[in-house]
Amino acid sequence: MTTSTRGAKTPAVLVLEDGRIFRGRAYGAVGETFGEAVFSTGMTGYQETLTDPSYHRQVVVMTAPHVGNTGVNDEDPESGQIWVAGYVVRDPARVPSNWRSQRSLDDELVQQGVVGISGVDTRALTRHLRERGAMRVGIFSGEAVAGSIDEASLLAKVQDAPQMKGANLSAEVATKEAYVVPAIGTKKFTVAAVDLGIKGMTPHRMAERGIEVHVLPATATVEDIYAVNPDGVFFSNGPGDPATADHPVSVMQGVLERKTPLFGICFGNQILGRSLGFGTFKLKYGHRGINQPVQDRTTGKVEVTAHNHGFAVDAPLDKVSETPYGRAEVSHVCLNDQVVEGLRLLDQPAFSVQYHPEAAAGPHDAAYLFDRFVTLMEAERA
Ligand SMILES: NC(=O)CC[C@H](N)C(=O)O
Image (cartoon, rainbow, N blue to C red; front, side, top):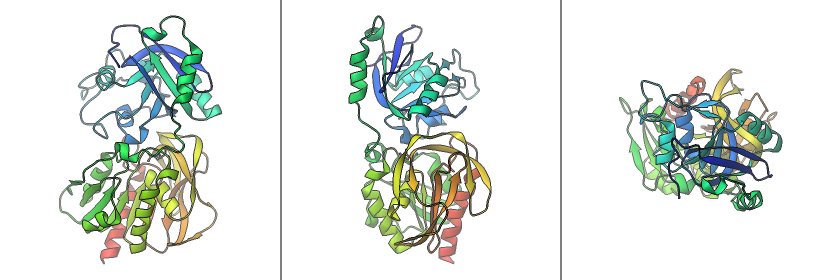
C-alpha cells in the first residue's frame, strides 16, 4: 500500500543487505520496496532511466545530486510505465522548471506507486556499492519508521528478497502481443525484433532508417520470426540474468543457422555470447550511465556511450574464437575496465553491443551501429 508524501517530511530508511543504513525522507510513494541497489551516473535523462524495462527489480541510486529539475513529460518515457523498483536521490527539485515539463517527478512517482527516498548521501552510498558490489536493498517509509526502528526486522526483510543473479524477468516486462512500428518514409526492410524488455527508442531508430519493425513477444519462436519474412532479426535489451535466457538463446541459434542478418543490444549481446558458446557473469557493480567510454576495435574509434548492464559476456579479447557459427571476435571494449562491449561474427552477418546506441538518454556517438545493421541487410539483398 502506498500513499502520497507531498508536503510532509515523512521519514524513510534505506537498508542494505550488508546491514548499512541510510536515513532520509520519503520521495514519491510511501511504503516499502525491495530490489537490487545499483547506481546510475547519468546527469540527465532520469525519465528514460525510470521507464527502461531493464531496470525491473532494481532500486536506482542517482549519483547526480539534483534530480527532478526538468519535471516529467509524456514524450520521453521509454515504455508505458516506470519500471525501477525504487528510487534514491539526494536533493529533489522543489519546483520543476522546463518548457516541456507537464508535472513534477515527485507526483509521477506517487501516481505510479514508486517508493523512493531523498536526502540520502548518495556519494557515500555509491562508494559503498563500488567497494562491496551491487546488493539487495529495501526502502521503508512512513509511520513504521518514524520513531526508533527495528533494524533487525527490516534487515531480515531485505535478506529475504530475491537476488538478481538467477532472475528470469523478460516475460514480466515484454509485450504480450506482437505489434508493428512502421517505417518512417519509404519502407526498405522488415525486421523481426524479439522484445525482451525493449526500449521505445530502439524500434524508432530502425524506423528512421526505413525499417518496418515487427516487435514480437519474448516467447516468440523461430517460426514466429520467419512468419514476418524478415530481412533482419533483432534481440533487445532486457532485465534479469542472461544465464536464465535459455529460450531466446535457442531461438537466436535458429536464426544463426539460417544466417539472417542479426543485431543485438545489451541483453541481446549477452544472448549472442551464449549462443556462440561463451559464458556470462555478474559484474561487481555494473555499468549504468550515459558517459561510458567504449572503443570500437574494428575502427579504433572511441565513443562515449549509454550503458545499463550488470552482467557481461566472458569472451577472449585477444583472439578470434572458433564457434559453431564460424569465427567470432570481441568488436567493442569498455575502456574503464576492459569489459566486453560488443561481439561480431566474421563468417556471417551477425553482431551485437552491450551498450545503448539508441541513446535514450545519452550521446549519439554509437548511432552508426544501426547503419551497420542496414548495411548487412543491403549486402544480403544485393
Ligand atoms: N539493459 C540490459 O539489457 C541489461 C541486460 C542484463 N539484464 C544486465 O543487467 O546485464
